[in-house]
Length: 424
Image (cartoon, rainbow, N blue to C red; front, side, top):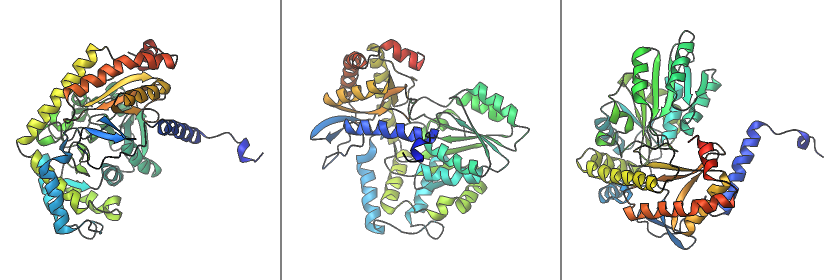
């Protein structure tokens, strides 16, 4: 027996083993790591293993990916500027960048920077914004990309801690505990949370901003961008005006039907500092011309009256989903009027069983399992898009209601176990 085999595994190794095992099971069952087989995509269905299924796994909430004006924007940009412009923005930016950023500044009415992805935006933003004498508080459910960026500043010695999800009472306690020890206190959270689709408690947070001068709010609103707010500026700005200590990141790879992250700043000076010092603005590649064309076309659509009709069509589906879910008495977790829904099933085995059953009935959905959620809080994550019909929604939920008792029985579980797991 080797020496290493006698050493117990670290917690990190145990977590990796669990993730690896969960992914292998999902992949082997044919419910994850799929390759679709369509030669053309209509936005509503996909083909997997020769079978066409209704796709309830897309975050393109407004269904704009085949909008003619956005497609034409891509065609025009690639025709004029080619498939790529291979230069760091520290040296030169291809021509469409200027128009894209001007349009986005018109949308958000604040200084903005375009990053190639939301993740790369956080990796530039957070290490520059947060000082060595600051403290950072992360919401337990803030997106993984924010948590990843926070590890960079933690390695610098910055105080980083995590608190329970959306607990403003705990947050205020921590502010009072930390305010005499640190220069600034940052709370990092999502505008719309990607698993349960619940919202950031903005009224309480704005009150904290008013009460504590050291307090700063950093929000990833990637899942709120586009479908919500005037000109699609997202959930946060649909509820509150821009605050002088708010730092916002919007996402263009979901409702916006393009790619990239929009870093929104309270002032030009802070924007320029991140532009000059942010690591991914110096060392990473840019957004390429085809997607800059998509951003420009989508921004123009969002700045027009047309966006209101797209948002209204999505909201009709959201309302219908909630109403139908209640009629079937399904365990809907974190109910809100966002287009992200989560039906709790509890044990991972129930989740594997349910997604398999649902796919066999002609629908594809996302299984949310560890590490996206705690191990015993597995659920069916169902994003809605404008491409879904009301019949699609009804049929999916009726299948879930029909099949859930069988999946629970197969795994020696019950509705009471689900209620206990999610504290319903």
